[in-house]
Length: 217
Image 1 (cartoon, rainbow, N blue to C red):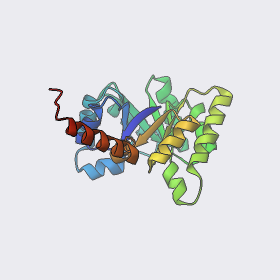
Image 2: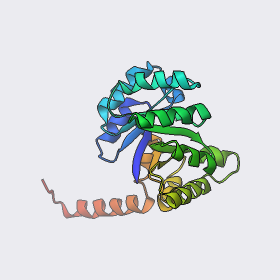
Image 3: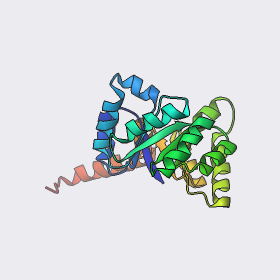
Image 4: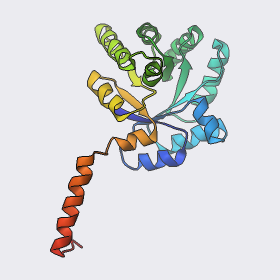
């Protein structure tokens, strides 16, 4: 499974990139607004930090303007992926951009039928939102299972990019189901390494080592 981080905080991205665990970055208008910076400046900086795919979302809702914005965004860097809404205009734009050789991420997916349409439009990534479905008392992980079965049934190459992930358990379940990518907030990605027994064991080792009075260096 690939790990993308869902943020526009370039300092956080820099820190995670240094671990070698980061495969890409996803952004959205809300994250950019939170940064308080100019959209294209943020995307350019992120693309300079990581060689992985960086999703940059169009702001338009009509096909013609989506295509114009996509051309502007993909000129920022070679690793820009155009993020499009799961609407008819978004799918139409996805098809054209895919035919032009541009990578796409179709976002705001909440049903298996939507995911099927995105795959038929040639999306590089489909972004099902797990947490938002859980928020309305639906099973977000079940959506990942349904999409995995459908894509495997028909040999679609679109990668399942599990989004709106809230907990380490979400990550584990998505990996078990077979999602190709998990995009997570920085805090969630860092939390994956934590386990109380690891901390307890390390404390015991350090205590015993201190008793020896030795030093490796």
